Length: 415
Image 1 (cartoon, rainbow, N blue to C red):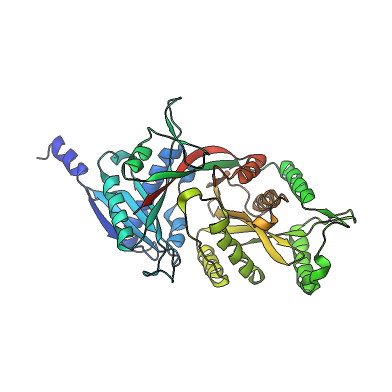
Image 2: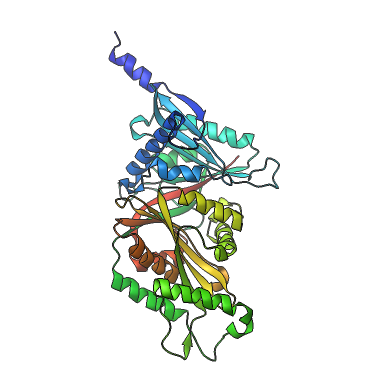
C-alpha cells in the first residue's frame, strides 16, 4: 500500500520534455499545449491578482504558428500532470549563420501549487542550453513582479532609473542567481469599460486641435497633388462610414486624417503598416535589452492578418494618415476576444518620431477606443503594457483613465 511519504515523493519527482506545437487544438497532440497554457494562466493570475490576464489556448495558438517568430515549447510533468512550461522564441534573420536572430526570448511558468521544487530551474536550464545551441548571444525575459507586501523593503532599479521591483521577490532572486540583470521595468495598466463617451469626445477634440495649422503656417499639401485623388477618396470613405469630423473653421486645417478598420488591413495601407510595425522594434524604448530590429513586409502583414482572422478574436486598427504625403504615420491596434466577458488587449501603438509633438498618440488611441465601443461593446476592460521610462505614452494612458495593474521586470542574460 502506498503511504503519504510515497505520494509526496512521486509528486516531487518531475520530468521535462520538449513537445511539438500543434497546428490545431482538435487532435490529441494539443493536450499538452493546452495544459501548458493553463499553467501559464495560473501563474499570471496569481502574480497579477486577477484572472483578466488569462488567455484561452484557442486565442493564443495562432501567434504560436507565426513562421517569422519561431517558438519551442517544453513542459514539466509530475505524476503525469503538466505542472510547468518553458518557451523559447526568436525571430528569423536570413543574414545570421543559423537563420535566426542572435537574441532569444525566454518564458518560464510553474504552477503555484508546484513551486519550490526546482522545476523552474530545470526549465530555465533547458531553454538557455537551447539558445546556446542556436548560437544566440543573449536572452530576454519579461517576468511579473508583484508589488512588495512589506513597505520599505529593498528595491532593485534598472539602469534607466525608472521603476523598480522588490528585491525580495521570488522571481527577482531566481533571475539574479542565474546571471540575469534587470534592464527595464514595464507597467501594466487597466482601462475600465464602458468608456465615458463625453470624456473621449473631449480628448479627441483636444488632440485634433493640437494637430491643426492655421493658413499661412506650414502647409505642404499643394506640393504633393499627385496623391490628392487617393487621399480624397480615402477621406470620403472614412467620413461616410465612421463619421469623421471635418473642420468648420475655414482658416484651420489639419494635415492629418484618422482611419479605422476592423480585421485585415486594407490593401492600400499594407506597406505603410509594415513600416510602422518595423519601426515599433526600433522606436519603442527597450533600455539595455538591445532587442533586434524586426522587419515587416506587406506580405507579412497580410499573412498575420489572415491568422488573426481565423482566430477567436478581432483586430481593430486606428491609423493616422499624413495628408501631404498620403502615408500612415501613426497607428494603434486592439485585440478583441469573441467572448465579451474577457478584456481587450491593447497591442502596438506608435507615432513615427518625425511626427511626434502633435498629440497624435492621444488622437489614435482615443479614435480606437471610440471604434471599439461602436464595434464591440460590452467588454470589461482594456489591458496594456508600457515601459516605465515611456512617459509620453504613460501620460496618454493616464489622461484616458488607465490605472496601475502591476509591474514586470525586463531582464537580460548574456550567454
